[in-house]
Image (cartoon, each protein chain N blue to C red):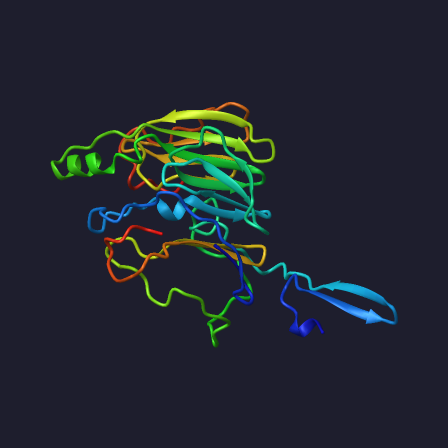
Length: 102
Length: 180
């Protein structure tokens, strides 16, 4: 059961008429990236003992292409904390950089 | 926007107000945009407008928990242990004028200040006016905020109730400081 749960994932296991709540603990060696440059000390190096070379794609989301690479790109920044990813995205059409940001 | 990092499901979205205009000069940044979003301890700290104040959002649903008073024109946010350190540039919206001056070889000063805020209470613990900063430059470690101006590197104690100057690291050009 724990093998298929994400860190901090929750399983409810039925035992007769009762349900037991089980939370998979987050490994202490798993880091977070809370600021643009990792942490408030602006040293862009993670303290993560589990990360390694990627071997598969977990999921994909739009936009597939960025608005520009010489003016502002679609993404301003992305950070992660508590099993969530947060980002600022300019979702304006990519046909022309002169279209105002959305 | 917020997504579940494991499966990519969209959790919530918040619209932004005025952001960087599309006529900004070629490859002119601004370099401050990535420093306006921080997530930690179940909260998200962000400016929802280019010159607007810092909002504290609930990381689970995106609802605004607090708007930090006096944090308009914030350029950089740092968060650690319930304390938010904000770098404010009063001239962040004068980039056309500043860029034009730089093309003439002139450097217009920015009026900057650093403020320390207790997130839970919203209390501003101290504010400190600083010289024009080399940006983005503010960093926090070992209870001190470090910032670099064109002429020196300065530090402020983040643990004190007042904006006490820490060690003045260099009075002269500090581009290449020895690691001491």
